[in-house]
Amino acid sequence: MAVSRAVGALFIVLILASCGTSAITEQLAPLREVKETITPETIAGKTILTYDSQHGTQVEYVGSDWRVYLWYPGNTSVVKGLWKLDRDPLLPFIETMCFQYVTRSRRTGLSRLTRWSCSPFGAYRSDVRDFAEGDVFGLAGGRLPFELDDRLTSIEQLQSQLAWE
Image (cartoon, rainbow, N blue to C red; front, side):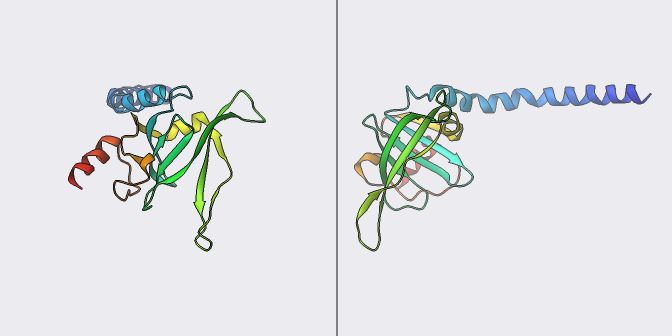
């Protein structure tokens, strides 16, 4: 009797789970497309929108000249830096995405580069939520279109805000 109840409960759970699967799959399809399209070979020359719970939404133009321009939530100016692809020294089969940003000392006014910050390319790609070809916000020009907040958004939504600014 207990076995038949367990089998019946499992059957109901499987039916309910399959009902929501298509909706979830449809929601994840565009995100999966983004993740499959962003590769180490194709990232240069794109505006990339990433999101994580620590930093929120960030937008960066990854130039084909190894320069990167970051639009960070709350900042009033573009954070300039460099990017490179590298290999993990301990696990050379793992490709890494590395960034090095320019910081400016408030006390002296002098700029300096931070240390390289690298993470596996797959980890970087897992934060990518959207991308577009080219420098769609003109970040390489050094000016921000407006102050970015940290809420999850898309490039299209940010572009629509530009129309109202």
